[in-house]
Image (tube, rainbow, N blue to C red; front, side, top):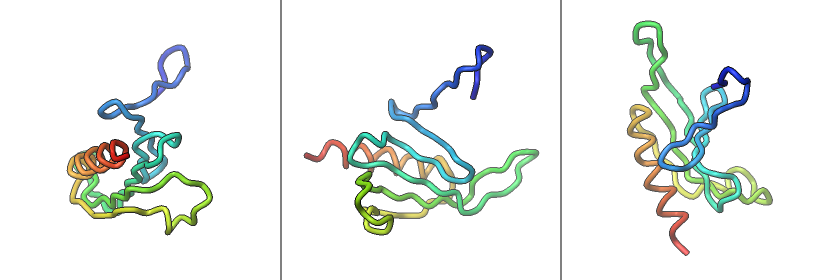
Length: 99
């Protein structure tokens, strides 16, 4: 989203960055050890809006030296974005607080 001055406002959810690129959402910061990747795998039209009906959620390590398949720590699939965001927030919080 851009404001009138043209600068971009960064979305946050529960105090952590939330970014979207096409049908993939990234939750968390790449400077942390873990990040969440959510991929919208199915959606339906409600009025004039696409609403996510199936979302794949993955807790991933941010280590750039690992292959992408080796970065995945946990994964699940949820029906709807709200359920996916709830799981994502809990998984990320637990992963980042475990020392």
